[in-house]
Amino acid sequence: MTPLPSVPASVPPSGHPPAPAAATCHNCDLALQPGAHFCPHCGQEAHLHAASMREFIHEFVGHYVALEGPLWRTLWAMLFLPGRLTREYFIGRRRRYVQPLRLYLSLSFIFFIAVHLLPGDHGLKVTRDEQAIAQARQGSCSSPGSHCTDWQRRLDGVGERLASSSAVQVQKRLDKLAPYAMLLMQPVFAGLLALVFLRRRMKYAEHFVFALHLHACWFAAYLLAIVLPAAATGIVALVLLHGVIALRTVYGTSWWGGVWRGGVLTALYLPLLLVGMGALVFGAALIA
Image: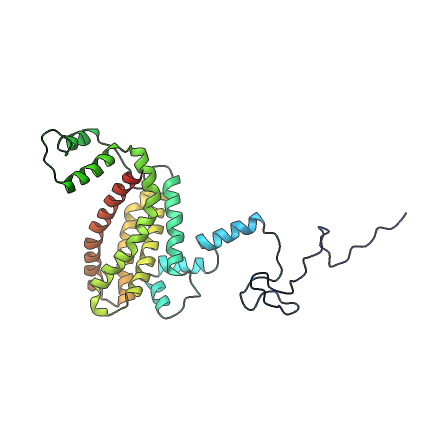
């Protein structure tokens, strides 16, 4: 019997030898040193291979959802050490934690997906009141005997388009626009922080970082309240206490200062949030 030829140790079980390292970088054409694993100029790998679906999924999750690296340390600090995450960012300890914007986007992504998939009504729901629409149309510019200016007619046309859109159409568009609307509210909340803490003479970007951390925490708390509806009241109380402690940690206020400033922020932010939600519904109807 003829013995089988031995397979060299350098050949993997698949039978295909590993791809040799490139003499030059495929990305920037820089000459690579023998045995180099990465390009010193652009950082691309010297050994390239066809990407697998597992690598694509890993890259997507790691880039958009932030499920790797210092995530768990970040979540612990965000939930159980109010304001610590922002203070750590201010003093330069940034590699230890997920970056503020990435943390916000990750929790926002998970939140809106969960609100959409979990059973029950957890978000803003659009309903259609036919009686109210009929009453509004009676006083519109299209009714007999009406005297409207050009500006009023334009507004009336916008309202008519809103009234003619179905609730399903508006709801679908609303679900798509809600994450972007909440992202746009972050600079608004940061501006309110800058106004309330005007004497602190902090940079606007510092207020923006705190706004991202605080909203990310609110997303996590809202998700917990959805999963545990019986504990929703207690979660709301803990969120309020968390906010006061976070203000004390970041801005150095007293307990009373944290309470009254938190009340002022709530009184200013909630109306703006309601106006933003109304504008979102209005815009969703126009685009639908």
